[in-house]
Length: 71
Image (cartoon, rainbow, N blue to C red; front, top):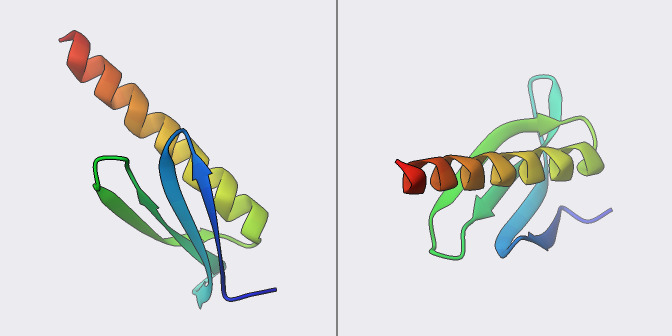
């Protein structure tokens, strides 16, 4: 396994990194198409779980944006 992997989801860039912090083995950064980024230090025990969490966070960010656009 490499130290990090990259993916794209709904136009967002995901960078999952192998980094042990407390009870977690992975962290991730997500970057929106507009360039806004977020870092999550404790993202999961496996690379797959960290990627799933990144996608969940992207879905949440988009839901918040959609809600704010409706207001």
